[in-house]
Length: 397
Image (cartoon, rainbow, N blue to C red; front, side, top):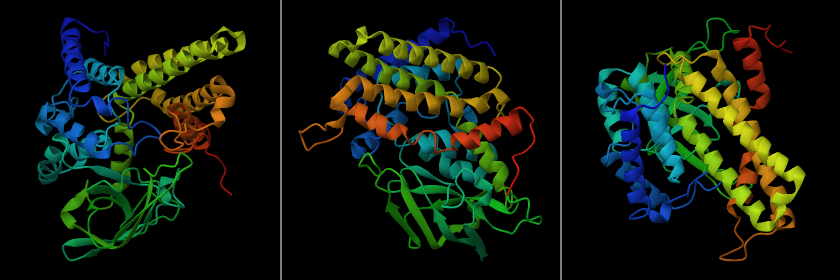
């Protein structure tokens, strides 16, 4: 696919840039640049209002097909939207799990009733979602999930625990990977799983925020103790949860990754501005590290464009498998660089209004997690070796 931008694409860029500039210097100026990594707790009600404004203006689901209620934009125009959003310092999206994961999955694997029920409320920004994958003993090894769902008449009854559930305390719905039957072959743990859509605001669900080193609690533990969802809320059919879950993970690596990289570029720019302000930009070693980070961003972008140019449906080419390992390691190093630029001031919190962390301090602390969540670096290397390169599987103890 040709990802060069033509005149129509540039006209769309102007449309997107104009709308974002007007909104983020006007009614929503207060949320500009807020809600990013380590700052997800900030200004929730205001960012929820922003989500609804995006929906009203048709800026949610820009890449969804028209038959699912989206704008059906071309891939270059999707890239433009995410880039312009990042350049305008749009706030962290409270609806990102719905738009980026739940919605495309329901669109691709769900039935007509599920699409009619759930997609419009994602598109208008009124219903928020969270993801129920990880468990205490099933993080990077997703097939090891033990949360169970048993059929009771017209419902599934769910028991178990999920962890690291982003935004669960705000979400109305969660897509939950649960075991509905034991695998026929014990060695094939991915068998017997189903993909359930579960209402969060009901008896039988307890949400416990996890306080992190940044002092924030956007992650949560979620306990299911007899929680219920309708039998009609199984996506892709009973027992097909693994296939659907892998489809969700593929959607996670779509055009929005280009927007993520622009957010990284914004962070790097702040580090450079600080180095220039403090005079440390004149230090040769530090200048070289900054140059290396800039080069890393260019490599990240070119590989993302290469991957997107080969996308067919929900399937991603094997080049996509290096993305998470690369950006997570790069971002962690950016956090280290930020602290080195700050020097001794990195150990000091701002006294006003209440000894809060600065944006760069939050960046450093939050990026410690980048190489762990969504598949640790070690697991990512295994996936690259086994699935992309066809090497023998790692020996099991």
